[in-house]
Figure 1: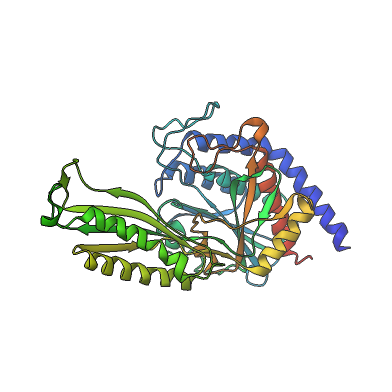
Figure 2 (figure 1 turned 90 degrees about the vertical axis):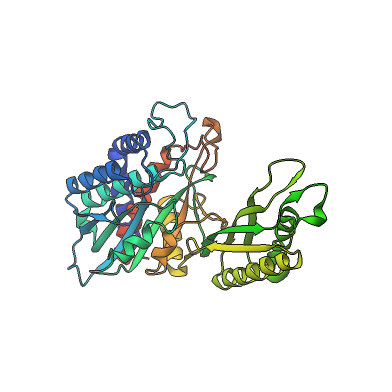
Length: 406
């Protein structure tokens, strides 16, 4: 009986998905034409709120300034049935688009180069599908449209602090991210650590400038800065177990103005990414020691600032296994894969620190169409068939989870 019911649900979901697909694609393109940066998503939030209301979904706006939350009530009483949450992010990036399709960004230096336009559109599509099949829903569904994922500390934490779960904490939360490393039609799952904690590193090395021909009369911050960079690389190679993923990259060195001048100061900027909170803390301590003592050994001063970013995305094992099985049923065995973790950061992690859940990778690339560029590229794009897969799968997953079907 369970397998027959699941087959029936799949057919219902796919039918509605196909009916609304073109409309959802147009919503994605509209949002893509009008990108908005972190906490500026006023137009996007308005589109979201109006669409949810048209689906007879309860709407709250103004959470974390531009955040929108919808609640769809299913069959069972609100406090007795389960509550499942979905999340999509809405903000764009401060960069120019270099694509040639007819829905490119109309705003200079703003672009949806990370798929948030598609995330938002797919969750609206999911809301429409589930509201159309509300008689099949045995519980409640919360739709979270979050501002400011691209800038730490991120909108997820603000939404949590402002009470997005005040009335009721969900039993589970799910989300997805467009991934160009996977071809369209595939969904990848990772149980446990999936994405990294990301911290920013800022170091100012302060010496004593002078003539380049007489370094003995100066205190060279360039040599000290270079030594600090080299010594920092030993943190991962000589302090962490080799099976622990971690990255420490110095991405900018600024200092000096001429061939014959030793400058007074040099500044360094970098990123530090980890999957394990204990490793993260250990790395911070080792950075402090290396910067301080390397500077002291070379006769300069050094100031270190570590700006903590998002925590690591750690998927709940049970939630991930459930989503993986649901994807096998909805997408197919060959289209559902065990994916690899990657070291980008995502503030969905803040939701996972409050609610068990899972965040999966939605394939969006299509080499035959030239859709191959990575996230945060000025030529990033998606095969829009991914929208069909993403909203259909989320809808199927929600109904299956709330019906407690294996």
